[in-house]
Amino acid sequence: MRPVTLVPDLVYVHGRFRNDTAVRVDPLTGRIHEVGPAVDLMAMGAVERLPGRALLPGFVNAHSHAFQRLIRGRTQWRPAGGEAADFWSWRRSMYGAAFALTPEDVYDAARFCFLEMLRAGITTVGEFHYLHRDPEGGRYADPIELARRVAMAAEEVGIRIVLLHTCYATGGIGRALEPSQRRFSTPDLDGYLADIDALLGAFAGHPGRTVGIAPHSLRAVPRAWLTPLHAHAAARDLPFHIHVSEQPSEVEDCLTAHGCRPVELLDGEGVLDRRLTAVHATHVTPGEIALLGGSGSMVCACPTTERDLGDGFLPGLALLEGGVRVALGSDSQTIIDFFEEMRLIEYHERLRGLRRVVLAVPGAAGRLEVAPLLLDLGTVAGARSLRLETGAILPGLLADLTAVDLEHPRIAGWDTGTLGAMLAMSGTADLVVDVWVGGVRRIDGGRHAREEVATAAFRDLARRIGS
Ligand SMILES: [Zn+2]
Image (cartoon, rainbow, N blue to C red; front, side, top):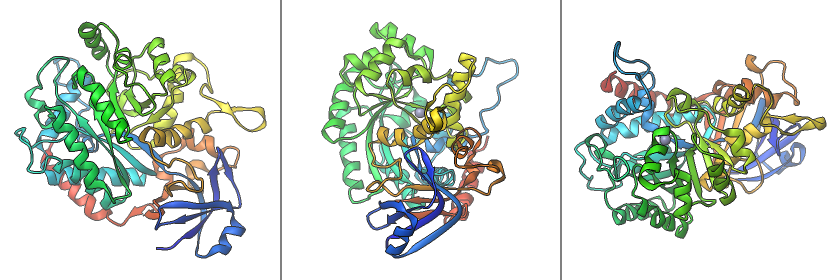
C-alpha cells in the first residue's frame, strides 16, 4: 500500500466543486496527503484516474442501530380493529428482533448493514450499541462480547466505527427494566465504566475503531449517573451521546419526575458541552435550543426514522439559527441514504413555513444556496459529533472519500453550478460508485469484495427471524 493520487473530474472542496484538482491519499497513514492542481500531484508517483466521477467527503452517520436493519419492512402494519400503531408499538417489534439474536447473528446483521452504508457512501458509523447480554439477561463470559462482534463486523467490511457503548439501567424514570429489556441491562455504573475501559483497551491499535459514552436516554439512566458518565467521557476525551426528547411522552415523564424539561435537566447536571450530542431533540422549546446552542452541544437528527416512527418534525431552522450544529443518522435503517436524510431537514422547513430555500448559506453570484449547508450536515457536522478528523477533503484529514457517477441519468444535465443542488435535493445512494476509508478502496464500481458472503448470511438470518 503506497500513496496514490486520485484524479476525478471534480473534487468537492470548501463547499465548491473544482476542476483540474487531485487528491493524494496514503493508505498507510490513512490520511489525505495533499489536495491541489492535478498536474502537480500526478507528478508525485502512482496515479489513479477516475473519469466521470466527482469526489466528495464520505458521509458520517452519527447515529445507527445496525441490528434494526433486520426489521425493515416488518413493522409497516397494525392489527385490524386494534390500537393505533405508534413509536411504542414499533418498539415492541424491535425488542422482539433484539431478543432472538445470537452473537453470530449480531455480527451478520451488523456486517450487512455496514456494507449497505458503505455502498451509500457512508464511511463512518456512530453505532449506538445497546445489545449487551444474552437472551436470558445473563452476562457473556466476556462482558463486551457483542460490542466486539459489532466492531469486527465493521472491520471486515472496512467502515470506520465509533462504538457508542450504551448505558441502560432503567425501564423508565425510577422504574426497573422490563423483562423485554434485559439484554440491554447495565445495572451498575462502575461495571459500565469498566466495560468502557475494556473496550478502549480492546480497540487500541485499531485505527478505524473508537469508543463513545452513550447513556441511552433520561428514561433509561438514573439522573445521578449523568455527571459521572460525562466525567468519564471528558477524562478520556470521548464523545457523549444521548437520545433526547424524541417523543412527547418522554418530555412529560421528565416534567412529572423532575419538574424540568430534558435539556434543562442535562444543563442542571452540567453535561451540556461540545462533546454532547442530543439525538433527535424533536420536541425542544426555544429555551432548550438556547441551552444547546450556548453550550456548543450538538443535535443528531434522523429524519427518515423520525418520519417512519411518527416522532414529529425536527425544529431544524430554529436549531441552526440558535447556533446548534446538526449531524445526521440512519438510526433504525428504514432507509440508508444520506442524500434523503440531508434534504428532509430542508423540506420539513418548507412544509412548516410555506416557503422555499430556507436553510441557505452564501453561494456564488450573491445567491443563498441550500446545497453547501445540507452537505455539511452529512459530513462535517457528523465528524464533529463523533470527534473525528474527517468530513472534508483537506490535507491531514482522514482519507474517507466517496465518488459519485457523473454519468448517472438522475443527474444528467449537471454543471458545476448545479451539481451540489442536484445531489442534495435529487440525489440517491445509487449515485455512489466508489468509496475509500482511510485511503483504502472499499467500494469499487458499486461493489464490495465481501458482498456475496455478507448478503447470503443476512438473508439466511432474516428468514430465521421471520416476520
Ligand atoms: Zn436511536
